[in-house]
Image (cartoon, rainbow, N blue to C red; front, side, top):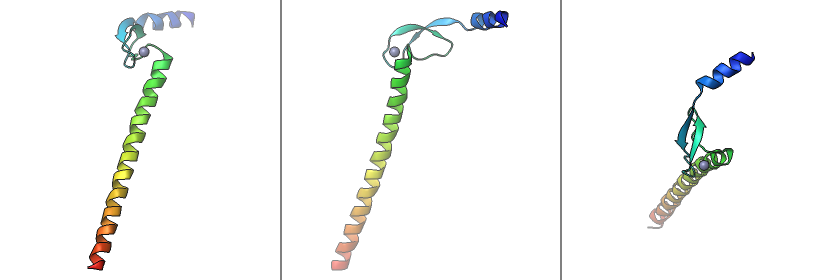
Length: 79
Ligand SMILES: [Zn+2]
């Protein structure tokens, strides 16, 4: 079992990478994109924040459209 672990560790190579969050260069395994767990969390949070913003924007836009349609209908009835 101990031998297997060593083989796996040898296959994964540490390469110099740039953190996708803070831009720092770091030694990362394989496809790592972040220098630390903190940056990974920050990235996840940012992704979700953007998603939340987009959802809120879309909801706001739809609400405005409905209000415009409602007021347009009201004006139509008045005339
Ligand atoms: Zn970082």
